Length: 270
Length: 139
Image (cartoon, rainbow over all chains, first blue to last red; front, side):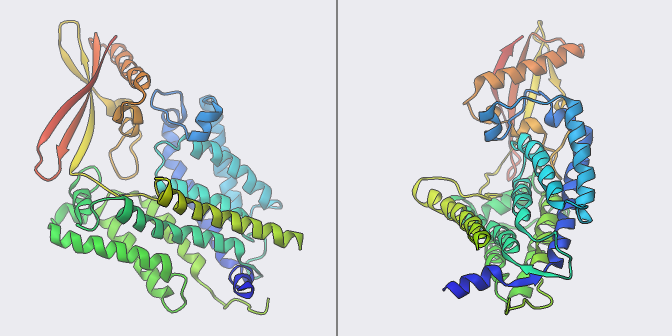
């Protein structure tokens, strides 16, 4: 049991996937904030539609002047660029400052923030435990990377339970059917040109549930990993072709697949 | 050695949070995280704001001109997710929002004595449209 635990968390693995992931997360975060730049006054100003995240509401944190928010976003974009290429001499300090900035920018915008924004916030926190300050050709204990991987796959497992046990309309396909029919959430690319009948959508809904479970568990097993990666790509491609879900969501999820590439093999003697 | 224990503490903390979410959902009626698309009805909802002038003249307030930021690939604006408009828990915030729209209308030469907020509900299956007025605020 103890050796299994140690093997799972502490075997030394190549650091390069974490480097790719860090650069990807920086690029993703910049892509998240850049389209928001023209609307900073609307998104972070004292407008009567603000719903700050719960901790912000409890703390009664004031709305900052627009110029301060602009400076924060500017600083964030610069630091993301620096962190993407290694973080300079003190990558942990740069990371900590990024976390503080994101704390405000994600937190204050948390009301309308979607699931993928929340996942990105969690992963930025967990990335702190990954050995990104080592050289990419070095090996390091993988526990930080494991946390990122577990968080990622848990999203797929949780979402299946949320849909089937607490949600509704998935076993009969109606949620997906209405989503694809809806001009607000569907009627997008493929679903705009092809009308799927309810029976067809019911099969698709079950395939989605099975696919999400398979991704959630299959990525952890060597024999099914490649197939689970393909399933993950297929799931997100299907969603991108039929539903009005931001491309940022798909990009963030697919970025995580780099964490599951193990080459060369982990050093089991470590 | 101390560092190893600290690391194990972080790992256990992470696992405790994940497990806690399951326990909360299973025994205390909490919601599971990552509920994207976990349920949907056949209704699409669109917010409409109407300025009612002193003579009863009704003018639609162009929300897309006031709220320019659209979410992701959708055309949903910030008020579409503003909770006080969808539940009845914070009437003060809801009225404040309506008054804000009224001030905007007044500033743009739209005659306004009161502001009415309406949810327009479209059945995506039958395309039947229903309008439900849920608040009228006098300016």
